[in-house]
Each structure stands twice: as structure tokens, then as C-alpha cells.
Image 1 (cartoon, one colour):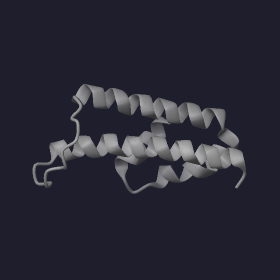
Image 2 (cartoon, rainbow, N blue to C red):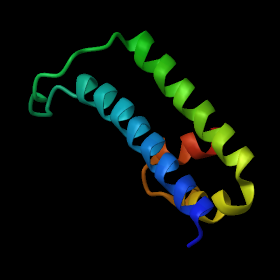
Image 3 (cartoon, helix red, strand yellow):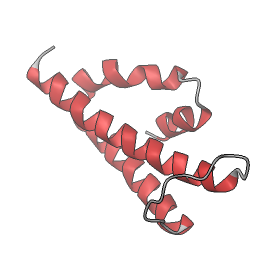
Image 4 (cartoon, rainbow, N blue to C red):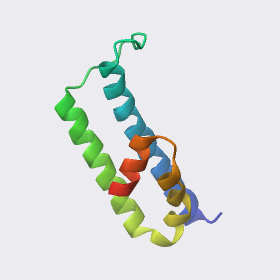
Length: 92
């Protein structure tokens, strides 16, 4: 793996983790059967939506700028079993 591909993967993984945290926080608040999450700073739903949209935009820009090395890392997300992840990939 060359340096450009490794750097892309590093940042793309960072954004995927951030996107996952946004989805997990929203899902945890919706489902009353889930055990309470550990105390974390709470964000308003509007701010989470804004953060999610900004994260998707950042991932899209990252992929557009590095399409040659980024496509091989990101194409699998279109087949992810998690519907939220698949939907986010379709936006990217």
C-alpha cells in the first residue's frame, strides 16, 4: 500500500468513525430498550444532523480528490449490512 492510499485510509476511517458515532448517538436516544449510554456530552439533534452532513461532505471531498486510491477502500461500503452506512455511502 503506497503512502497516498494509507493516508486516504487513515482519514476516511476517521470520518467513518465520526459518522458511526453520530448514528449511534441518535439511535441510542430513540430506542428506550437500550441500556443507558455512559455519560457523554449531549448534542442537540439539529447539531448531530449538521455534523453528519458535514462528515458526509468531507468524505465526499476526500474521495473526489483521491479517486484513484480511495475507490478501492470505499466501494465496499455500498454493500455494508448497516443501512445507515449504506445510505451515507450513497450520499458520498
